[in-house]
Image (cartoon, rainbow, N blue to C red; front, side, top):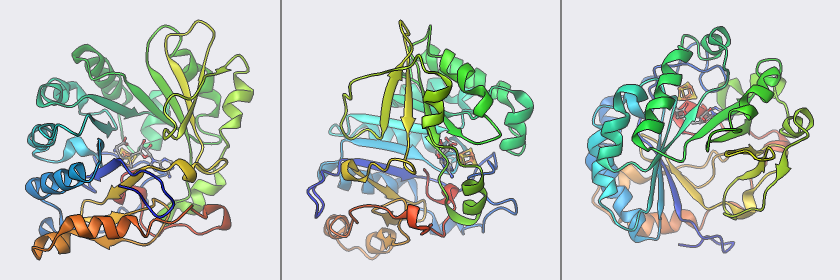
Length: 318
Ligand code: SAM
Ligand code: SF4
């Protein structure tokens, strides 16, 4: 499936809930978000039907996200269903990792290939503060369990936040020395009600390279990956830099997003949304609708001009 600019769209990010057991400061406003009625959320069957339609249109990679996807009832069943679609060769999930210790084995058995785990500090107190209540110990246990059951390769997502974790860059990078994991620094994006906060705490990813000058740039293997990879000499793992703000990668964008309410988003940073759930529930062709939406995909985002989306990240899924 191609868009108007000839980009091959083969990656679907499926948000299955906008609820979360954490409340990260850059993702969710302090007063929370408006609760959505249960009936407005796509059912497991609908999510699977949509995944199948996308698979038939050439989507080969599906990432389950949220809110916190492991907090959604029926997640294991959903993974089982989606993993049966043979053309989806890469079925992954992004999680805060807090529930992974108890769920990793079932996820693996259900057909999940790998997990990305978000962790922005290696200090208990700081982690607890940024997530408004999270316990780092649970995440670390989750990471170990994911390794043990083979939900690999594991990627750790670290949102770089000025004055918060900029003094932990070396500690994060050193995790890649003896283990085959990827640590990926993600630039803080100005999104939703907390956009101003994100702008005032923004630090460009170049800061990582200034802090650890021994990092060596690697050749890009996957042209559609938003990350540029680096490595410490002799390291087993890699350090990724995802820089949507300082160095946008729209020209290689291969993705489409679906919110848990069934709104199709052709671009993370666009307010334009298309109601796929409505089309599905009315019994119309979702295949035609998806193809139509892909042709509306913009060439690039314009966050550098100050146009931020109204939705909060927790309602989109990253
Ligand atoms: N709850 C899961 C988690 O935290 O991994 C999945 C959903 S979360 C919205 C997906 C990813 O978006 C996480 O890696 C999170 O750190 C990232 N994220 C959230 N808000 C962000 C922001 N304003 N800028 C950059 N990344 C953000
Ligand atoms: Fe929840 Fe993930 Fe957002 Fe944190 S980043 S509030 S864990 S959805």
